[in-house]
Image 1 (tube, rainbow, N blue to C red):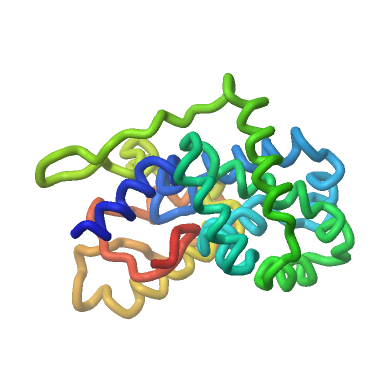
Image 2 (image 1 turned 90 degrees about the vertical axis):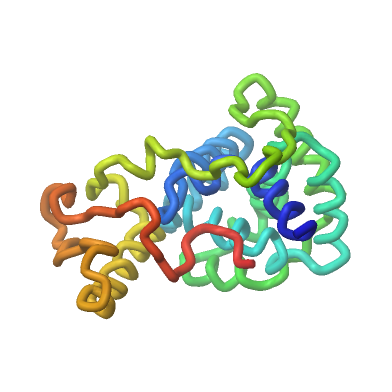
Length: 237
């Protein structure tokens, strides 16, 4: 129980907005990180756009593993020492800082495929420079941050809600699932629907969609509590 509440406390405080649109990727957080990258390194942002690298492509791999895939063990431990002793925006800003301090590596990528290979392997990073850059970003953005201060878990039998009900319950359109990460989620929902519709007819209603035409608001309905067994841009526990 203690371990569970430690993880829950981290999610509530240091992973703010990450789950706003679950089961879809949170466009709030991916757009915010893209904004930070663009503000601190326009050349890198332009390079990502030139290669067709969407913000989910570079945000999600780092967020999913909490830097475990791109940092060696000792550097990862140092980073988390700083995450847990800093303001609640530190972990999110560290994602943007990671790309900015390693800009030369990513500017050398000639294709999206090469970029994806590099981001799924350890990157030689000066952890001191990464932490200092993250703190610099936090200082420059402190008046533009929407992150709340550290808060304890609610006492009792319930915890804080991680998702934003207004976003989860909104009618989905093609625009809202336009990025590649969300599109893959919709395809997975369709696969689940094909295999489980007969057994659980009320669990999810996803007819043939994704035909590239118009709104899917009449075809896609995600009901609260629907069991979805797949990974989006979330932490892999």
